[in-house]
Amino acid sequence: MNKLKYISFALIAAVSLISCENDLETAPTNQADEAEIFKTAESAETVINGTWAKFNDDGTTYANIGYSTVLRTSDAMGSDVAVLTNKYGFPSAYAFTDLVNNTGGRSLYIWTSLYSVINNMNNVIARIDAAEGTQEKKDQVKGQAKALRAFCYWNLASFYQFSYLKDKNAPTAPIYTEPATTNSIGKKKASLEEIYTLIKSDLTDANQLLQNYSRNNKDKIDRSVVNGLLARVYLNTGEWTKAVASAQIAKTGFPLMNAEKYKEGFNDITNGEWIWGHAQTQEQSGESYAFHFLDVSSSGSYYYSFMADPYFKDLFDTNDIRSSLFSWDGLPGREGLLRYAKFKFKANLIADIVFMRAAEMYLIEAEAEARNGNVTNAVTVLNQLKTARKANVYTGSLAQNDVIKEVLIERRKELFGEGFSLLDIIRTQGKVERKAYVNSSGQPIAVQVTTPSGSVKTVNGRGHSVFAFPDQSAFAPNSRYYLFSIPQKEIENNPNL
Image 1: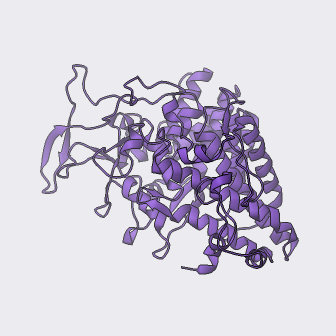
Image 2 (image 1 turned 135 degrees about the vertical axis):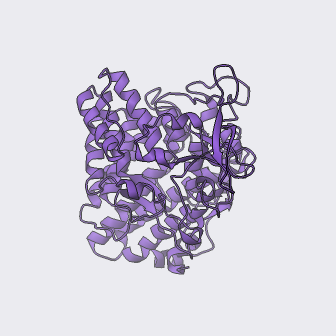
Image 3 (image 1 turned 30 degrees about the horizontal axis):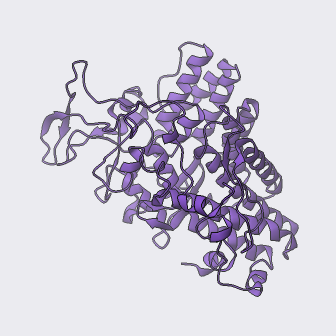
């Protein structure tokens, strides 16, 4: 492992577990160390490299490794992933007992990870102007730091409070824009409006600062990534025209993949449709562990726990290339579960992680056009994606709500397993939809499976197993069970929350 890439986490002042006064830690270093790290723009860039690597590949448990933890949690708390509750990893998230628990390990891990990145980026932003190097290099480093900070605050705004369109003044999470020190004081919760103001400012700055930057790999943030993040932000805040414009810029140069590529396993960052992701190697493969939950068809997958809800399959046309990825499991102990073989390990059980694709930008553009009243434009963009997936084009009602509904269904179909389920439920003020896989008489629906010996047998199809919140109330919009909780340790040590 390249030590230079990781030196930043060993040397700079960082928030260790929480971002409050009594539990701040500074790294074992001295001013000379920090001065050396930030002496040049190139050395300051290693802070971003190290932060990005740690943010993705380090963790506290096998189920909490890197930013993928947020993505897997979001999908486990949605409608279309039927998590196996007897498998390690995400059963408690699926049952809505995990993130509502502010003493749990996952709540602490996610909060800590986001604020640690924020603090490291605050250090870069504060010091890069004084570093040696060309202005172009300093602009690149500063732009990437601002974009990564904005990305973390976008996650806080998306998962720690209800929709901006419900109440933009709702208190959410503290804002920190200066490097933490031993004298730092924990701040009160900022409102969604305040957080989104910072996010948009950071991303707008990043877009300008990165105008001359050309990246050499898709782990790096460039203007395409920045505009993709802006498109997400504007979709959250209801700025439809800006969402359309940003999505159009972001997807430029990233053609929708063909049918053959779609079936290859969503494991390769060189895929032409991917805008942003995290590459994995044998030496650096921590985040690949996410595929042990996502990959339900490879023999080497340990947990194969993110099965598909059988009703999810019904959303697809039979000619849709995505439809061919479904199969009823016939292995012992798994009979009747519905596999969706979208994610597959590469050789040696590694897999690159996708964070942003052109397809998402088509969907943002279509939804924003529809919500802005431009339904004809929305349908045109939506059908471009449908055509690429060999699905039937949309020829239904042009009523605004009907078109929006169709786009949201397409988001579920296209972005399955990529971390958008809970995010969209919160954003649209929707609710989780789960029901038992039974017929109108309440009897299990029979399906045919192929056993390892090649014989075909009839078994009961299996889908969801959790159908209500922990207090047994029905799934509903804007439920407290959807929100990630601020860790108890943070609350105890920050009296300003």
